[in-house]
Image 1: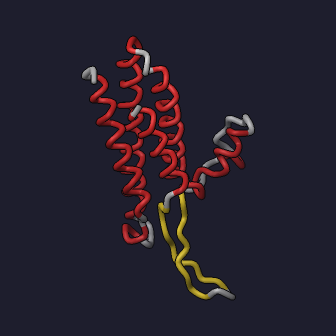
Image 2: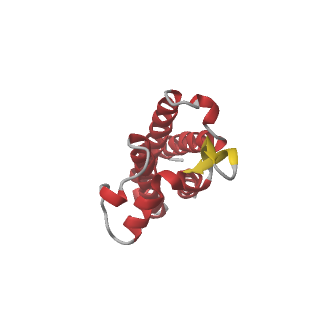
Length: 154
């Protein structure tokens, strides 16, 4: 069951948790800090995929160039891992789905690592990275560990 819930938790974290904050200066509101969730990066792409437009170009392209694409890839791979983990409840398919769960965890950790490295080069640097980024990385690491545990037969 944990191999089902961990990828779903990673998806929820990547989509709804605060990922990044930036200073915004407005004519009426003055200077304020705006917190962005993962929905900022992948929201248009997810909307396109819900409407069965499986494209990553044009209006369906994730924002943030490669950062958004990696984040969307982590969400897609986690969704596939969660769906296959349901089939993995049958003992015959358990190790195969554990391999997919392990791969999904590795993809999430790599995507969050790339995001953090890319944010180091921006104006706000690591100070602008919010707790949701770290939570998603930790969830990816737990997903990877869960997949490894399933490969051992547990």
